[in-house]
Amino acid sequence: MGIPVAMISAIYELPLTTGANRVVRGARIEHVCGDPSLGPEKDFEYGLRITRTALKALQTPVDKPTLFNPADMPPVREAVHAS
Image (cartoon, rainbow, N blue to C red; front, top):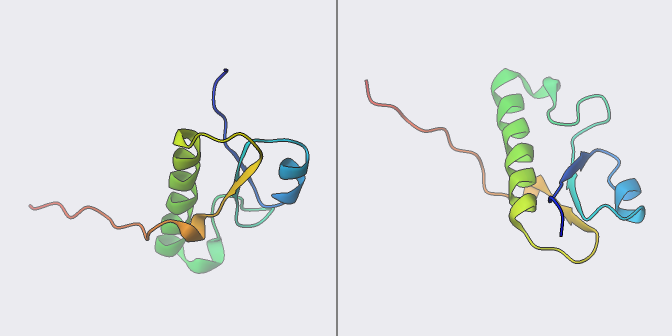
């Protein structure tokens, strides 16, 4: 059975055609898990969405190469802490 692995890649066609089972669509080649042009807060939220997509991919049973798209995930909401 093995250990599930999710690959985050901006060039997602390559791992899909070479047989990677769980591929998460990354942002850009130079910033796979984010986009600094969005500004610090939105970049963090975008990176968190990609990471959560990868965690969901690890929990999803697959039998063939499958692409997981962070755009399909619900928006990230920060927890509000009472002071």
